[in-house]
Length: 137
Image (cartoon, rainbow, N blue to C red; front, side, top):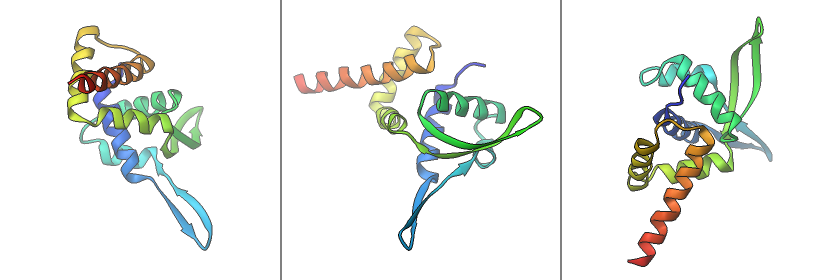
């Protein structure tokens, strides 16, 4: 499958908005979300397969924390998404600025389809370049 970078951006924002922590009498817990709930909410924008693939790639790239993987017949049927990792928060902050997102999109147009790691590095590089340009003004 091909990575959809808009799907990555949308899922990062979605996970950030839906996960939380609670404190019940000094006992803390992460309120995670499930793969199935993400698919139910985001099916309007993306296929179930695209969401599943993107989330597993995001987990492999250390952008999200997942656990509680349920398997049926050797296949993954569901998992919990606990939160964004520090790398996930960093990438989301980098790409949610419209000006920076436009620069990243222009860079993607020049180089075409790239790996998740290259996308993350490109976003960071675009941010650095934009900051340096702003400082020189």
